Each structure stands twice: as structure tokens, then as C-alpha cells.
Image 1 (cartoon, rainbow, N blue to C red):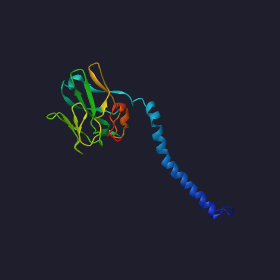
Image 2: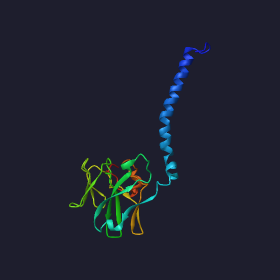
Image 3: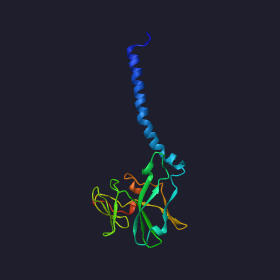
Image 4: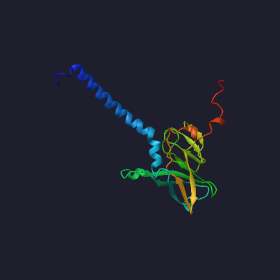
Length: 184
């Protein structure tokens, strides 16, 4: 310490330094989260269409498990970049592609053809074959990917990854829903 800096001044500067360091440590992830839509828009693979395979792999009236490679992957992702999904061929022309994650807490759901239900092993959530909620704790149906058919292949828009915290307001039209209770 130089003679012109008091102990109080030195400790005040040291405290200010630590406060700035902690603020930057907490602030940078928050800033990154806020600016993530901008970085996602510039990522070429984020909204890409990914092939699930030939239409012949998905017989009419059946639901099959399919996997695709995450287009926004890192070299260190390995096997975790292979993402499963459920494909339902409704009538030979119309398809439904569901995320494998339960809408409650994200556990992987299984398809039971005997009962025509998707079942979640974690908390007993059940979904009908069209992905809508049947029973249990989930408040909404399974997440459904956008799809298109090109050159005999089924493609999905893989950038739309499901999360349990996704705003439900974007998925449903709230203005048409009844209020949860008659609390007027």
C-alpha cells in the first residue's frame, strides 16, 4: 500500500472490485439469455428441416418411434444429439409428429398400441393417440412438430425444441377458453 491510500479507501476499492466481479458473473448469463433469440435467428441449422425417413417406414394407422440428428449440435454431443420422436400416420396423407417428452416434467413417454395411449412413467401422465391430454398432471398435450412431405420423405422442423417452460399462450388460443372457475 502506498502511504496516500488509507486502509478504508483500499478496502472500499477491493469491495467495489468484488461487487463488479459478482455482478458480471451473474449478469453475463442473463444478458446471453435475453439476447439468445438474436443468436438463434442467425444460426443456420436452427430452423432447418430434417428427414425422419421414407414414408414407407410409417404405415397408415400406426405410431412408430423415429430419431433424427439435432441440426444444432456440437462435436462433443455424441449420442445425445440423436433425438427420438413419435410419428403417427393418421390416414396415409396426414401425419402427426410428437416430441417424446411429457409436457409435465419432460420424462420420455412410451406408446402403448393396445390401449392407444402414450404413457409417462414418471407421474402417470397419459395422452390420447392424437397427442391430447388424457389424464394425470400434464396441463396440455404433447408437443407436436411441424412437418412436410417432400420426395417421398417425412421432414420435420427440428429447430423447435420442446421445453416444459414454453409459454402455453403461444400454443393455444386463450381468448376462446373458459375461465378455470366462476370466481366473478
